[in-house]
Image 1: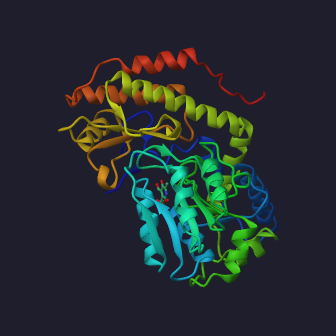
Image 2 (image 1 turned 60 degrees about the horizontal axis):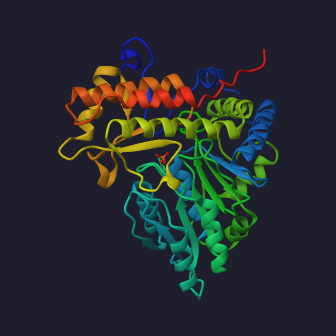
Image 3 (image 1 turned 120 degrees about the vertical axis):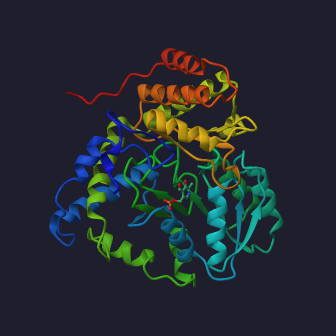
Amino acid sequence: MFNLDRHPSGRHFLQIPGPTNVPDRVLRAIDRPTIDHRGPEFAQLTTEILEGLKEVFRTSGPVIIFPASGTGAWEAALVNTLSAGDRVLMFETGHFATLWRAMAEKLGLVVEFVPGDWRSGVDPALVEAKLAEDRAHAFKAVMVVHNETSTGATSRIGDIRQAIDRAGHPALFMVDTISSLASIDYRHAEWGVDVTVAGSQKGLMLPPGLSFNAVSDKAIAASKQARLPRAYWRWDETIAMNRQGYFPSTPATNLLYGLHEALAMLREEGLPAVFARHQRHAEATRRAVRGWGLEVLCRNPAEYSGSLTAVMMPAGHDADAFRREVLDRFDMSLGTGLGKLAGRVFRIGHLGHFNDLMLCGTLCGVEMGLALRDVPHREGGVGDALAYLRENGATVARRAA
Ligand SMILES: Cc1ncc(COP(=O)(O)O)c(C=O)c1O
């Protein structure tokens, strides 16, 4: 029988790039009696959450919450704004861009999928070139995955916005921030994003089960013309009911308790400090990887991810066998290689509720696993990470007494 307490003593290390470790404060918030979602307390909860979400997405416009995983929010972004046969421009950054493309095609959209090497983000110059060629403005949307969770390459959304503007193209701009929101700097309004897609289980430090669309006025205008069939995913009904603090159908009440608490935690730490913490842990991780003599999958330092690091396994060594060893010996889950990277990379998640000593434990588990599996490497990568953490100190943010 499935037994949640089967883990050995101590905490399980959940170092996949999402779902991430859920803080005790959030778990305790979730562990409260479910209330009436049509009652007065609930309206206050919703109102406070919707305000807090705007701070995280950096928008003054609506943020719609779905009781769904990120895939639901992908679908909502498309069915609310587009019509069957519409052309959209996408970029093959990795597994998640490939899945979003497949969804768009299943819905009847015509995708131009610009090939990529699964080691890089989206090149803004390529966006500009593709859009400049499209003089008839056939592309109705440009869709980009901000942080490609399968590779650890982060696309430069602000630069891509400028590329779209330089091309003078009116396409909607949709961005998947499922593994970047509340981990890597992101600005929905300033970067002129029309639909931002996000999920609960990564930087927001919640269990899986909620996802989001932050929407611009332009996206709302597009939704009035769009013809793809939509019912459950409609934005308009949710936006209208949210004004009173309610939802058209039963919301995930207890996850919303958790979200309220997670937003409070992010506000206490401050988003700039949250982003700096992620960058620092990412840099320490890369130092460990280089110290081991292994290679970071992401090619371009300007695109290194703050959320995760994908590590290339030396030829002839199976990344999944290594991950299994680390799980069996040290009770730590590392991320698997996805799609065409299966068996060839493992991913270290360093996002969400995470601190220096959790990173040290994570990297120790990796270094011991490499030795146990006889993976060719140099010992001491952990030491390089420790030196970086020690010398580039950040004071632990404490709540005022
Ligand atoms: C960047 C990205 N997009 C989309 C998804 C799909 O989201 P979900 O698995 O929550 O449906 C994921 C999941 O990890 C992701 O990392």
